[in-house]
Length: 71
Image (cartoon, rainbow, N blue to C red; front, side, top):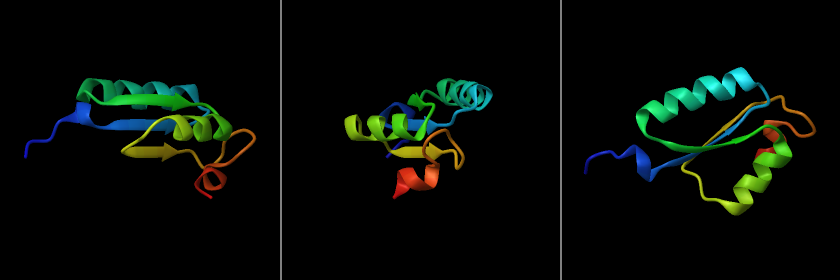
């Protein structure tokens, strides 16, 4: 079965705008759908409201770390 990037949705949880930009450009060029979360709490809200195939979590974010989001 052929791979189709638009079948996958990715959450990028990082408070660094340059990381968000770089990953967003890379994923956009490959045809992936993605969302950004700038804090751990925003990441949790996204996870409650959407289904993701992959979540990229920054370990150190404001008010809640990536590890805390996983817990």
